[in-house]
Image (spheres, helix red, strand yellow):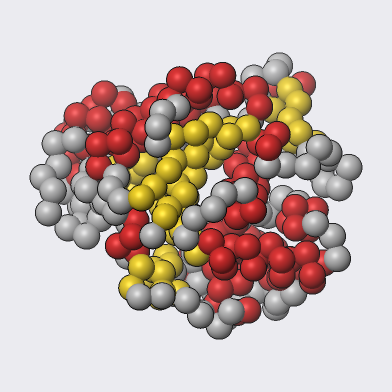
Length: 292
């Protein structure tokens, strides 16, 4: 199985992305190639991370000419806005999700595996292990969106509108994780379905609202359009994630306590960028994990 690993990142996450790349080079196995999906202004910076198994892709190669970023005047140019004639201004996290969807028509592989910049692999991992025969493992927390952050239900509703499905399904599954595998053929079928239903390009349909979650769109497509074909839902996440800074003390001891929650079947950790643990400490404790 050939895997295209995709990480949508930006300048503020460069150091974290560099640590992800180091961990992938150490632990990733099998037939894989890593694509860093960045704004055209960040290509030179991220080019430092390129190598035989890693390519930097500008969103200029993924987006239509009418969608591009500009400095946000309200942030004195520190942030960027993505402007188009078909949507309200979009933020960086919207652009990152669009880049991942666009990859379905840009590369050849069996699997698309999205990994966030703040993930660090801690154990050997071959993405081919996500397949069981002709079915791929898909993260799904059954009815998990109902008790998650308020945005989850809005993301599910937008996915329904884009796909021509009921606004909010019952149960309301959560498909969001920081390591998400997709079937390439299903991802391409998803874009085709969106265009057929909406009568415009998939990207125009998706940016009709800012309530975008590419994981929710893909998950609902698989479950409610494909009837789950080719996928095996699994509530176990591939990575152990520290989502909130209040969960553990922001000290080496707190990070060690977090690491004790790493399950034997998890191959990575994710420490959110707004949790104030130094990258040097994350690197030290991540690479000290004993493989199972």
